[in-house]
Image 1 (cartoon, rainbow, N blue to C red):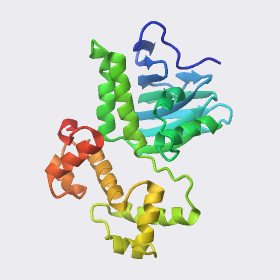
Image 2: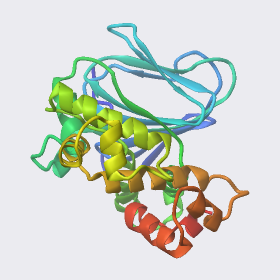
Image 3: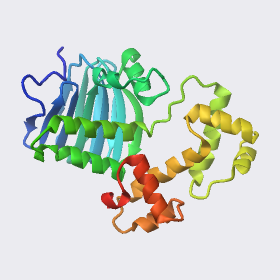
Image 4: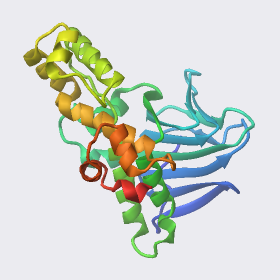
Length: 298
């Protein structure tokens, strides 16, 4: 076995053509992405994997299969989805699911790159994923999410870094960090939570998911969960690491990022659709969360 990551010697930001329609870009020793199209079901990437890594897989068309070779288990990412996976030193094969074209973007980040961002709090996404890599025994799916406008925006910027003349590798690492931050913020990490607490928090979350544009009041939510407001607030924050109000806003902004892909909707219409009365306030909160204004994505 050999390392997947250490492909750079004297230069940084190294571009390697894998096929006429697929290329590998080594940003640094520890951060690699592959982008382009694959058409055939035969493997286009085989990893005799010596490394622990996080993989973020975005498929805009077709379907991608990731096969864990020791177990034979196959993970799938379909068109319009982004998957987050961890891998702990096992062999794997990546292939398109059928003969149709698969348009993909694959980001591979080594554990030693993530290690610099550890906080010491295992409830933080980076610490959670890092621990998964250290003690996991196979290719593991962490979460599958729909592609949103923020993800498309950041990936597009990353794909055009080669047009920059100076500090390409540093700028690309910055974009990768932004992309990971946006993806990892979607993860609901529920470690070290009692079973009854998790059940209560999940019930409240399910109710909020049904209508986060016009959510129930705290009193109504507690009543529907057969508990009191004090306990509900405490348990919900313990499980999801944020208040109920903040979680509702998180759901609204995530939905807005999906709607921003729709060319037919104005920013004002999107703001209203997800529950904001004022477009200006919506734009400010969106920027504070994602670091980009909705009008930039449009």
